[in-house]
Image (cartoon, rainbow, N blue to C red; front, side):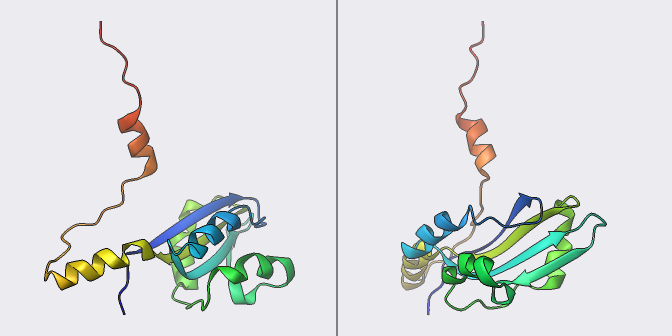
Length: 142
């Protein structure tokens, strides 16, 4: 089975509740086959700096309903230890979603590279903020 590149994404939210605002975009990406969500781990940092985590399968009611259809089989690859390492990005009373997803759009490219007996030498993500700076209008020099 071929795989596309896999990314780890951490999305920070103010407060301690996930309102599901990102779910429609994630659902669209998964429905179109652009990405495949491998794992989602939710974490919260309380006012004292203590970190708690929850897998999607541990959620209940409306929270479970928001995230459940996004991943067919959540793998459990993300762990509490991963959350604790990444918790430094959170302030007290903030929460985050850690997501591991495959860029399925690239699977055909991976297959063709393999068929051509070639090797991918570099794959690097360029942050959006860098691209915005590169394409920002430059002031005219006098």
